Image 1 (tube, rainbow, N blue to C red):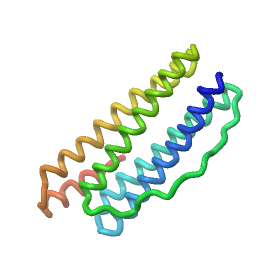
Image 2: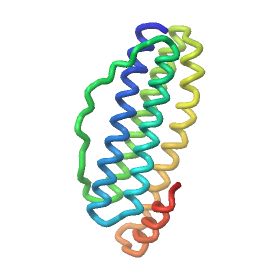
Image 3: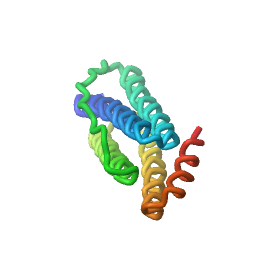
Image 4: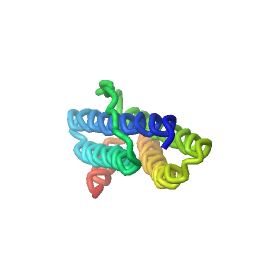
Length: 161
């Protein structure tokens, strides 16, 4: 594995861990305003992001590299509304998508076919992540200030497995 691909994947481990940290911070926000379904959704999302970090971690070791964990910055921990929090989550997913795509292009340039193949799973996953988060944003936009609608969406998000 080239040094460039190693460095980019190693940085991605940190980005995925930050994603988990951000979503856990969003869960604390939702718990604090008694939207326990929203909080559950974010807690599950945080676990999923840690899983992504570990997937890259294991790939790096399979390729004979050593992971160097970067410092993780403190995430924002308050939002003005559930919509604002989910808009931030969607923007973050777009940031992660761009990062994965950049690493994929780098792997192509470096002729690292194993990394290309590995990253294909993440590219597909990011389509799902953006679609899922975007749908919740659109639902929240339609709700506007409906307490009943918010309660119903909270119940729906709380049923996430």
